[in-house]
Length: 190
Image 1 (cartoon, helix red, strand yellow):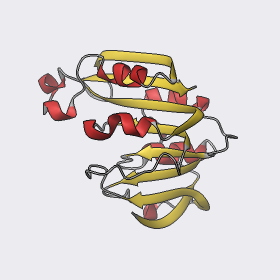
Image 2: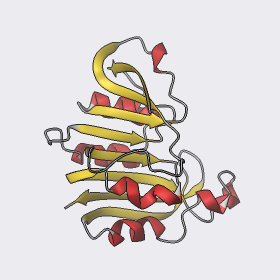
Image 3: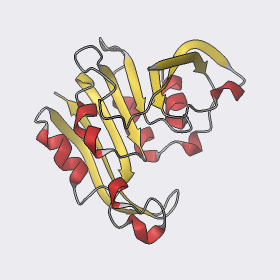
């Protein structure tokens, strides 16, 4: 695991934030023991910045780190970036050592670790997950079945843990930001 510079950001274009994430992010506890939110496979960092602006300490993890250095307004210690291959055979986190008050995953699926990332949530922690599903091949990429959820797969994985309350689940076609087939869930660890 390689850690790099920490950033705290105070301005962001909210239009790039997933409406699903924006709708449920307010449910992530600010005053929990774990106090941090994990933006897993953070990509460009759009949700990392949004969560930090809501007052969370955020650990953003991805193989390629977002280019946050260009942001003009910074406040140290809000965001921690970690460059990590999330598709290694061994799961990169130890749920016995690290828990999070929130877990946000968008546009990412790696089945061998799908159920393991759920173990990273602390009791009362909120899962916000949204990614592509079967049928998306009709709309472009991703089209590889390895990167597309099967029917109700996300819901089934969360329910199999028997330690989550489902707040919302959706599966189907969306038009924005582009036509796609998706599944998304918001659940709280009990």
